[in-house]
Image (tube, rainbow over all chains, first blue to last red; front, side):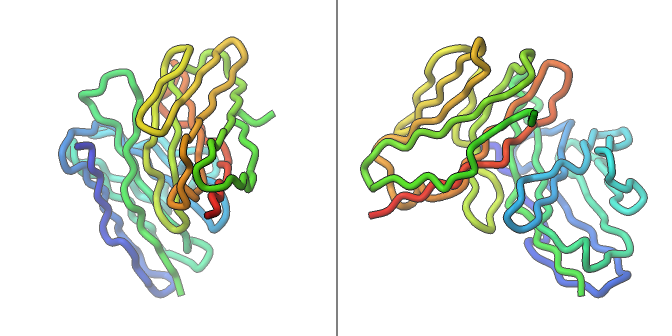
Length: 118
Length: 111
């Protein structure tokens, strides 16, 4: 149980294009999902908290117009990197908070998406 | 002071030994504590969660929490080379469900 998938697992795109990454909770519902970014040899950095049916909450310094988040259902959140540039190349990881686990706040992570912008 | 602190390591232990990983946190109202394992190039994988003072055991892993000292640790018994990874300590508080991560401790288990 508590499986989270991400698609695609890796993507290479040209500078200036947009890339959409999907995060799905496969066997549980998740009102809240999170998006992280991790650069090589650095720790996870929380980008935003995604809430089903409402606007995402972005961390300080993260551009909401560049990183569009949509959480349209209890099992799917998407992150769109708009007008991607080489400095956006990173490992993007989502996590989901199982609604049925109440206040435990346990987050289950997806396998990550490696984005390379040429 | 960082909110969650870990020694970056590497911590090197021989196969079969006990690996002891430590973490301190600054926010006294922290209520949920987690250990994640992250292999190079992979996403974090939940190892243990602990919510109350004392020890919690799961197989070869034991998490220890001391809220008075604001300290949480992870012991790995009978360490195996496959345990070689970065171990992330994470904490949440009553006011938010966001995870606050430490920078991780790199563990190396040598044969």
